[in-house]
Amino acid sequence: MVHMFARWVETSGMETAPRTSPDPSPPAPPPHGLRVALATLGCRLNEAETASIGQRFVARGYTVVPFGEPADVCVVNSCTVTLEADRKCRQLVRQALKRNPETFVAVVGCYAQVGHEALQRIDGLDLIVGSAEKLNVVELIDERPGKRPAPEVVRPRPSREAFALPSEATEGAARSLRANLKVQDGCDFMCAFCLIPFARGRARSRAVWDIQREAQARLAAGHKELVLTGVNIGTYAHDGRGFTELVEMLERLPGLERLRISSIEPTTVESTLIRHIANSKVLCPHVHIPLQAGSDRVLAAMKRQHTQRDFLALLEEANEHMPDAMLATDLMVGFPGESDADFAETLRVMRESPLVYAHIFRYSERPGTAAARRPASERVAPEVKRERSEALHELSREKFAAWRRRFEGRTVRVLTEQLDTETQTVSGTSDEYLKVRLPLSSMPPSWRSEPLNRLLTARVTAASESSEVVDAWVNETPGHVDTYGK
Ligand code: SF4
View 1 (spheres, rainbow, N blue to C red):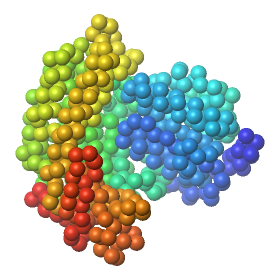
View 2 (view 1 turned 60 degrees about the vertical axis):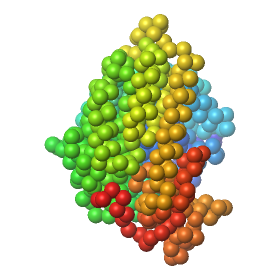
View 3 (view 1 turned 120 degrees about the horizontal axis):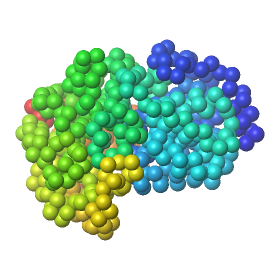
View 4 (view 1 turned 135 degrees about the horizontal axis):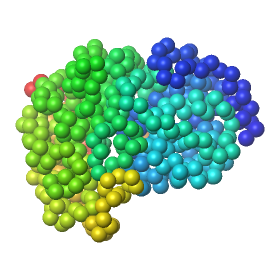
């Protein structure tokens, strides 16, 4: 404790940048020896934000170490989408404190925002930072170094205003070769089961100029793919631009090879967007549209804004223009009142539609939501939820495997992301989000010493039932492949 505190005191006189000032960023101080370990729970947006939090720590002289290794500071970027996510967060905090009771531990994000009372009961936890201030956690720590006698809670209400991100949070090395680009936060939809509007606040968009700034910085740093992330990205609106205009602006950026849209609510998909994706040389043929339930009765009870028919129309359009695209969805089982007949509708949509993959969730009651106020008699028994979840998983696995097999013998474009030195293979992701494994020996000789972040075309040689990764062989020099007649 003394050692850690002494090192903190040494650095406490550092200049601090204004909390939300986007520009200019202060020069990075030399490393002061403090180590920070970061853990992320939940969604892709949380992953993007953890990367930004890490970059802000680095900008202040910290060294980022893997979670679980000795660290002076541990930060858990939390999720509260299910009771299980809450439990995992508390477990990570306790594990970090058990490893070293002198470690400074902070919980930030969604669970910190809505579950702060439960978190405050954890002995040894130092800081609880809600959604609005989560990116500023390093400043909150450095402003008052050392362990707190009791957890300090910082959770102002998230604003509705457009936002920009501090530049030092977005211009360092991204953790993945596919860089997440946060464009939006919060949601106004108030689906009956969802705590996100409470945890992250109402919908707000990131300023266009700030998105452009980060995108250009990422491309200059060598990233070839950007993934647009947010809570409800289709509601993007800033400076007279909607989501499609934002996408068009990004597509024009020199050096951008691939642009992926993470997940978009069905009612926010503008009428031209699907065709636009199909005709773009940059946008990936990968569409994730959350359905949640196949039955209109359940969709209405969930307060979703679409019907089964709306969803299917969108999916058919995507399938017509991009017949081999990854068409994915989110499905929830066990929403209060979901009958066998309702679930049969979900199963039917999954079976008969062009969907190739589903993220499947079991309904988990979240206090404060409209669904939590429904009568206890409507609750679906845990074993029924389990059976329904298993049936959907089985179907999703089958459809996903059949989709992968379609690519056998065909050429896909792959961005290489990981090297396995033991098997001498390189893995990466295709435009469609197919996970692809390539023998290093099939790559051009000049690339073999630096095989990652290469965009190449490869022929799929084998797709198996049991593995989500298909095998392929590099068969061409770098370039675009004309998979969709683009
Ligand atoms: S659209 Fe519905 S499920 Fe998605 S974040 Fe908003 S309220 Fe939650």
